[in-house]
Amino acid sequence: MRHRRPTVVDLLSMKGKRQLSMLRVETLDEADAAERAGVDLVSVPPALLGPAFREAAPSVFAFPGLEYGDLVTAEEYIRAAFQALKAGGDAVYCAASLQTVRRMRDEGIPVCGHLGLVPSKATWTGGFRAVGKTALGALEIWRQTKELEEAGAFAAEIEVVPGDVASAVSKRTAMLMLSMGAGSGCDAQYLFADDVLGANRGHVPRHAKIYRNFAAEYDRLHQERIAAFCEYVADVKSGAYPGEAHLVGIDPAELEAFLLALD
Image (cartoon, rainbow, N blue to C red; front, side, top):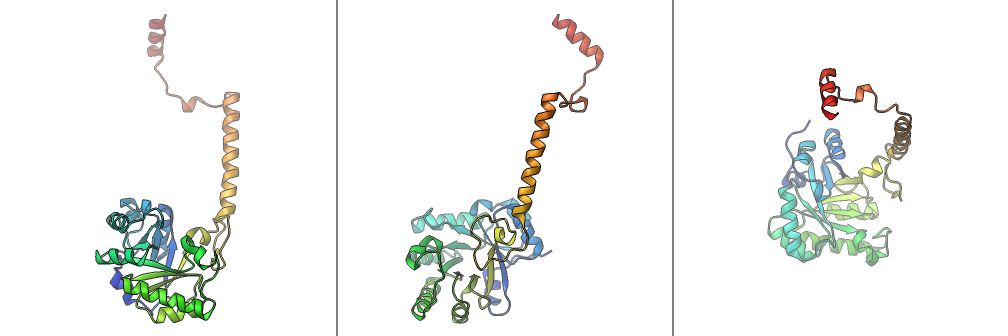
């Protein structure tokens, strides 16, 4: 079991030396599993943070996501970032403007940006599709990378970009590059726990790798849930529940005194 949580400096010192593992986790159980499995980095909803999170995952580096659109002004982002860091986060994910990233960096807040396919801005890159498949598209990703780096971000998620493009970009930036479907030439590999566990019932992205079939297990458990409820209803109707073992007793003399008092 690890004990010391890495710092931003620690992570940047690993750039180009080894691949880091990263998961999106949304429950304390998933955070605990990530800790026990030795996952390096986790992305989390800010609401998950707190003492219970850090008890479950004391040594994973956590990126709480500041959801784009829920916050608008730089002041709102800064306030939410400080709250997230105070609650146990180590850095914040932010897809807001460069000005907002710069403001947070000026306050000493470690910021992770987003490049390539950015879901909240996908309309500008043609929808939910790969980005950077042409020379011009790849150069645009490089331009955005340099702007993000100059704004003060220490890391960036790079999503659904050709591996050769992402690798070339990663080698030329000081930022830690977190690959989601962008190949092994970056500094970390990032997947959602739902995809890893096979719990995602919707679209499974090309870059996801499924290691378990939790959806089937959830279905089995749901059928068991229905069966248990049916048995309970039948017991209530037949009088099998409650039984003697489910009741609180009373001394016969006390019961007799109570009944006499009622009469």
